[in-house]
Image 1 (cartoon, rainbow, N blue to C red):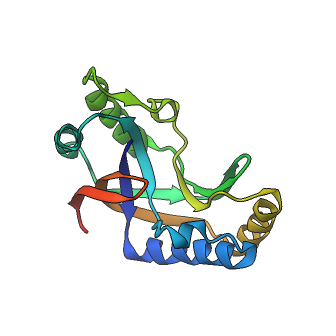
Image 2: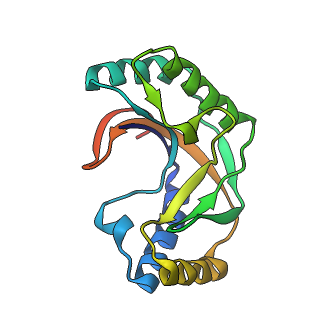
Image 3: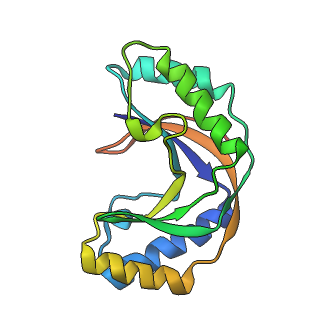
Length: 174
């Protein structure tokens, strides 16, 4: 599995990391911290046989990347165990995910995760993961009190391979 991921400006990172830390402290679920999951938004997830080919495809799509502002006005959940900050699917994000999908889908050896197809993607920034039912309710209470809508700037994109996390390529401001 490979991930193409958007990363944020420092101010946004500080705000989102604070939420991640608060959820971890309140729920006792430190998955995000223990695994060094930094604030990010995954643009695509796909299967490919070789790192070299995944890097080539990332380099192709990197030429289309633009760096722009997004709005993060709300929180949401993927039941049963993920809580996230939700970004507005604006024209910029839709264009980005569509361009990535178009490049990746031209390679017959790639299998794109169905949750990252064009018009089948929910732009989100995970705040808590692997939460049980009680932890999810506690996390929601934390975010209900602490979350504030925010504007964020996407400043870079990366290609990585998770489990364990390996960054393979970055572009933009790092």
